[in-house]
Image: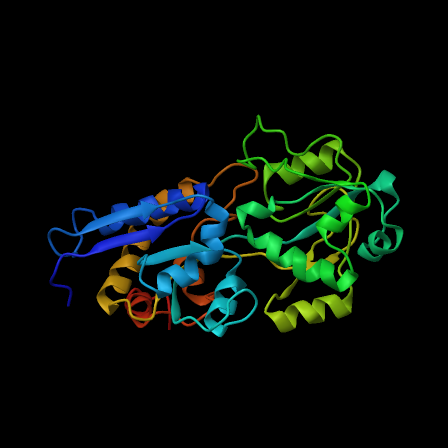
Length: 320
């Protein structure tokens, strides 16, 4: 049982996650909270937020934060298993997964004539390439490095061919007034396909989506990145299913050492705030792609649930 005051710090490296983290904080710090008197709860962000998302598992495992949110879901799997960018396994557990249906996309303007990533490696065109800036530490950067290496080039190689890596990714990809991409672009390699940004890119430009080859998908799976599909018709220009990497899942996680009661109270706070969380993500292209369902939050976890979280889900009837 929690008896002494505690300071709960929820790492929310991104504006969408700040919305979720602040509501969890409200639930934990509400009128019916069972946290000890004198406890504090804070939703914390920082700069650059994307790098904190990748570094969050280590920071949580070391105790710098009580819990954090990351994406894609398999990033947490890699962290727990010590794969990919994580040098050693980290003792982490899941608390909840929020619905986020996303894929990695390799898109080029049709007028380039490019039909595959191998075309780029062979032709070495001077593309104007839109990708998340490397200094942001975005997970896409690590993923692109791993994938493009299999094709024999990097974004920096594109610059060596006379192209340019654009720094045009909008801060808010769902903001109606933002510019979705530099109009001079030739290619966009990025995720967040559920956003208004991608809807506007594909409606304003003739786009071809490039598939990943089976051997590359197998290599990615071995690294911990599961395959996914950009389904036909999901966006204008997707005329057939496109094999790629899945980028789904916002995962709230913690260290294995989190007290059971705190994990229990955290999930209870999420359920208390469930409607408020869902209401933050509405409209035609919500970043959280469907309303929060507590049964799915418990079942779609990429790593084992924390025992305290599992106890709440079972008591509330969300797990059988």
